[in-house]
Amino acid sequence: MIVLAFDSSLNALSVAVVRRRQDAPLISEAWEARTGHAERLLEMIGEVMVEAGVAFSALDRIAVTVGPGSFTGVRVGVAAARGLALALRRPAIGFTNLAVMAHEAARLLGAHAGRLLGVAIDARDGANYFQLFEGENAASPPLLLAADAAAAVIGRRHVVLVGSGADAVAAAVAAAGGEGETALRDLLPRAPALASLAEAAAAQDPVLPLYLRPHGAKPPTRAEATEEGPSLPSEAASGGAPAAS
Image 1: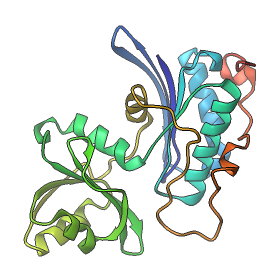
Image 2 (image 1 turned 90 degrees about the vertical axis):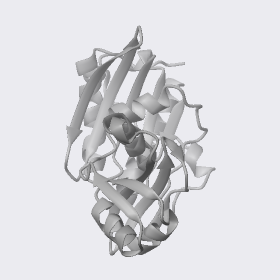
Image 3 (image 1 turned 30 degrees about the vertical axis):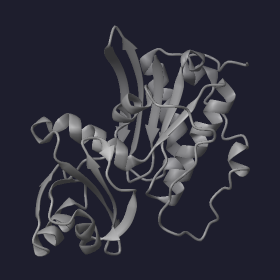
Image 4 (image 1 turned 45 degrees about the vertical axis):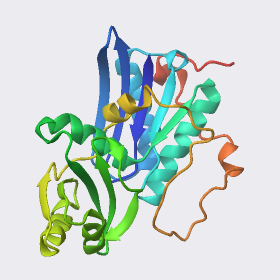
């Protein structure tokens, strides 16, 4: 299976092509900490496809993070995934960046396997994008919460907290009489972890964004989500033309 995966939901761009051969993944990846996701995402996709030596027509599925995060970044990523899936007639798979980070944390923190895991992303203005996991299974929905409210969700249970909001939530847990330890404060949703999740997931029709925080712009409706997305990178940049049917 060959999966193209990308994340543009936060303050970085991550793109990967993952090819699995005899259970060993071959990964071509690009990562940039930057803004300007709308201008750069499709360029990075084309560059990684060339590096991987994979034609768009050879892809089996497209995976994208659906949020929460930057309104523009989330919408750009979801639109690109829908456009690629439509043009290539391939399934699109969406995961929250919180689930992708939990998957990567479970891989990196082997000694913490089986413990309650909290993913906390600093969402500014005193809020965090937050979700609890038991192993890699969600133990709460994705939430937008102040640190003390996240601590209330955790309660007195021992928790390992990861992500840019980990310290704030751990302090609130301690203040409430609980026990929280922090790890992987710089963790971000990287595309290879997303691709790993997408390999076994069911396709979604259509992939829809998750914002959590209200925004002045109107999110797309389900009907609007079926409209054609952005055009593909050129054949010269992609290593092959997309399938016509």
